[in-house]
Length: 57
Image 1 (cartoon, one colour):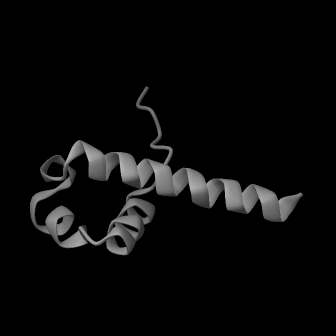
Image 2: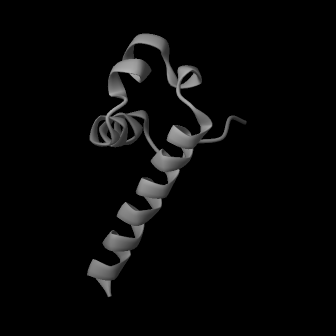
């Protein structure tokens, strides 16, 4: 059984746009970005998730 991705491609694309390397992702895929940029996607996703949780409480 395949694992469902935690972060949708659309969400990753939006974050990549926000961080300024969406063109690289669009043209070459996520394999072309640096590990630092990939980590920044995760970091930003966590920030967004925490902000969403704070609004609920």
